[in-house]
Image 1 (cartoon, rainbow over the protein chains, first blue to last red):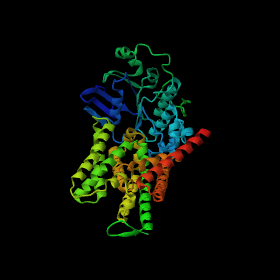
Image 2: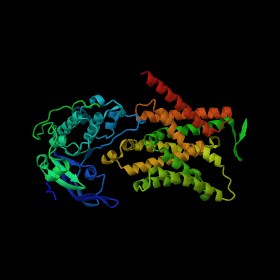
Image 3: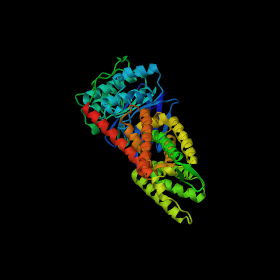
Image 4: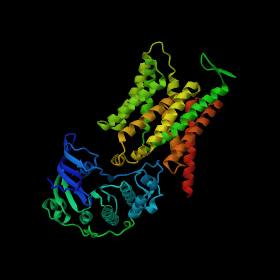
Length: 252
Length: 277
């Protein structure tokens, strides 16, 4: 079991999830801590999405405990998001639906996520990368203490993925929220994460800081011993004050 | 000219037409906004299922001697709740569940009516509507119920729109998804009860879907679409009634044909404009 720090916003202890008698997660413990980016990696079916759903309260564990600090607010960016072609709605209206942001917060979030030029576009006309930034902006308008991102870079090209992870790191530093992110792209997440949880068949195969996890035998068994040339595409220093401004263009 | 409509009361043609018109316009005002959500949430088949179950409500209304609208409302709400609950425990695909409930409830209604000895029911009127048989009392139901439905829809507009866009995001953001869904389904059920006499069980969903689909061409916001859908629905009622009186057509189907014609014109014009740009 993981040693738990005192500042956990959400604490999972020995959590298990089973559907129709089939075990999806077993004995998973996790602390979600303010200011920390926790990345869940693993092959398809490893239990990453289920774990994220337990963290944000969409799935109830069949065993174990989930404790949330009072007033924990969650901003959630789902992996799949599509809008019915018959629903006429702009990005501005979509973001405003959350209804929690005042004008100052709105301006701050719009500037930080670089979505000012997208606000009056119909949601159906946005590219994958633009939609991700709008979803991220909407999540930030909730004043989240925890930002939960389900494969935010899925479907984006390598350059856009790098820009998106840079943006996530910047937003974490700026807003001080905990970030729990699922990713398949190990090259990118290794540089962006504070903690990596490597899942296999519903169990935590290994965990820790990226530098130590990539040396772990279980990790190497799952993903190989060498990361690709893009590893560490951007520097990551928690004590640096982040530069303002959005991620680069990512249309397409 | 005098038309004998009931055994007890005679009405003039003007009153006759105005009552039908008022009923149709009242329905259009409610069906437009609600139908927009039915379209956005892709719930046309769900609506069909509720509409089919309305005949069971008619049968129960006769059986217990209660107002038929109330009977329809109760049955539709029960079926709606049943559908929501069954969706939570999916063992069967949604459309399979809908198919089972739609046709079994319609058949159950027909069988129940057949068992009622001494009762002569105008089945065609229930299946295809009879707007010309609407009474002033029905108008109270349509307008009273309509105002209630619209007020409730306005009250749940924001959370309903949120969960229409993404149910799980809405849930994480604090929307109480199940209660909002149940209220919405109850509103659809109530609208079906109000609309049945006008366009009938088999055509009622068309008044929810066709004006909303046509309104999409003009709308830039969800609210605009809801309002334009209501206006297109009103035009369809006017056109259908006019056609019905001019050519002695069955009124419910004439209204639906009128709505379809409007949809075809609007969609064609939109396509032509888009092709030029």
